[in-house]
Length: 298
Image (cartoon, rainbow, N blue to C red; front, side, top):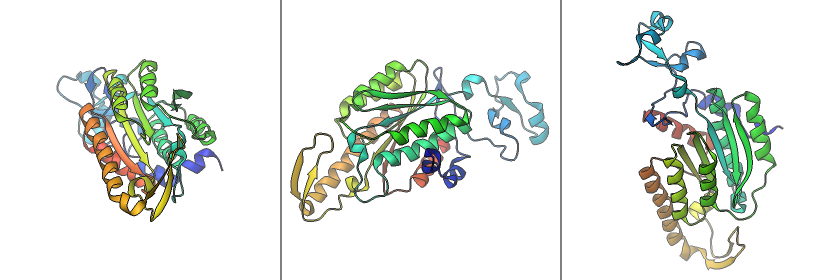
């Protein structure tokens, strides 16, 4: 089974095909609300149009669409329609964890990345791949041809999460690398000190990038389903701790909720999309619901 077949299911393609990932993208300082095509019955070319608004050059009106719809639409400018996306994957050892779910956090993230990569290429936008642990490890240049998604997924399928992570340093490195405003989609469990990460996220936004932060945790890291005396191991430092799970559960769940809420607030302040997920969620349903909300805002 190829990486594409393994991570990109036909039923997921059907669900996401008409959603538009570009709804919040910033180009040259302007916020453009880009929605899915209102012309589902026509050819793909009509998805590259928007309604005529006062100030548009009447010469840009597409009279063929007017003849079919009795409404004025203009061709979108290239700057409005062409964006570059980067899938940014955390390779730290903790991403390889699963307690009782079918997929590890890393595999779950690959499925999300596969769907988003497909969506961008379907929209004829180039998408690239960056992976990191303590620094950037792999880089695939953005391309929009359909075969490129197979290259992205083949690389991801070969990688194994291992070692320590430095999310903040890696995101700062990415901010310095990217020369043009892009759509940066980050997949990480964010199991690190949050303040340096916030600074790096702000740096990305300051450089004009649209950022979506997928905070992927294992189901056990959210619910803490353990009973009795358990021994826990920190995945990166390998430090071990024995504790009574029943007594610890309530405090743990409260701390995780507070941790997520802190990210939610900081990201909202920076106009970053924060998407908290855990591996018990059907990733296709979670992604579809998120994209629907994102699209509806604009």
